[in-house]
Amino acid sequence: MTHGPLAGKILMFALPLALSSMLQQLFNAADLAVVGRFTNAQAMAAVGSNSSVISLLVSLFVGLSVGANVVIGNLLGADRRDRISDAVHTIIAVSLISGAFLLVTGLIVAQPILRLMGAPEEVIRLASVYLRIYFCGMPAITLYNFGSAVLRARGDSRRPFLALVLAGVVNVLLNLVFVVGFHLHVIGVALATVLSNCLSGGLIILFLLREKDEFRLDLRRLRIRKDILVRILRIGLPAGIQGMVFSISNVVIQSAVNSFGANCIAGMTAGQNFDFLSYCLLNAFGQACVTFTSQNYGAMDRERCLKVRRLGLGLGIGIDILFILVMLLFKNRLILLFTTDPEVIRYAMVRVNYAFALHFLCGTYEITGGALRGMNRSSVPAIISLVGTCLFRLIYVFTILPLNRNPVTLILVYPITWCITGLAMNIAYYTVMRRWARVGTI
Image 1 (cartoon, rainbow, N blue to C red):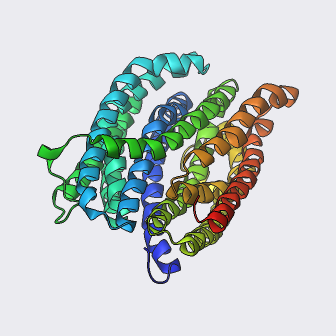
Image 2: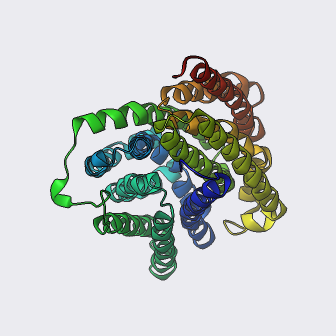
């Protein structure tokens, strides 16, 4: 990552990661599709209304996994391979503790959060059952995320992708068996998700156990090294807090969606899957910028860091625009995979036409923010995202939405905040890079 042409290497890193994330989202969408086609709108809303709650509780630890990626990338770039083994064992230990914490927390707060969000009564019971079963798989989810961060830091995005493909196929098959075969409905899709997450997390650990170099995992050496943990927290904690506050703003928006009823919840959730797929592409190039920038920052190569961000931004947004155009071409047929209910479809199209069509704008801050994190400036994108996206969304929901209360007005908050955040993030990036050029450090 620190020598030779970059464009091909960034593509080879980002595309498997994008496909991995997109497959994961497609498998999650399969939960929704199976429930939507074989049960009813209430069950579909129960599964769909949980996404913002899950994101709220998991975001902190996903951010920490970004810190793990950057720490190992810096060590590789600075040729400090003697510390990599300590970092790997600290990261896996942190992932196990994180998973256990999320399991307990999810079981306790699942139903209270749903009630705070104003979910309809006919949805709450099924949604809380789904959430509680889902959180039983949290240790496996954190193992997958942190373990994949370790592998990606050394440039290996292929094996995490393969693990997810296998787990996703199992998820879809189990969905059909549990829901269609045994009529378990919401319980069935939750069980399928937990079992498939256990498979993907287990495979990542198996890969690390079979490594031949300093990346090899030895379960007897699992312990937390304080200096490594501090570095992970310094980089990952701002990203995690950003993700949590970002999720809080989405919980507020989900609460507004809930107020329009079960059909709106189901439709918006179906349409949101389009957004998630686009985000997977952009986030993959953001992760590529984190990894490539962290190694070149470790080698103190400013020009190469600039080139990484420039190529990541151009390739990521360009590919995402093509993806959006193709999806819009087939949107009517794709929505039918989730539901045939005309009212649910109407709400889904609001989400697709007013948010998904402009989703490439996310890349302006997601990819640039990744470059800043790769240079150990995690707090900068965190603060910008909190103000530009989260704070403005809260203000919008409580001030602008009441003036014209309808789903279209609500969904327009997304492209507006993407533009604000993207502009601020790019100004911050060029400010940091000018300082590096002027004084030799950032």
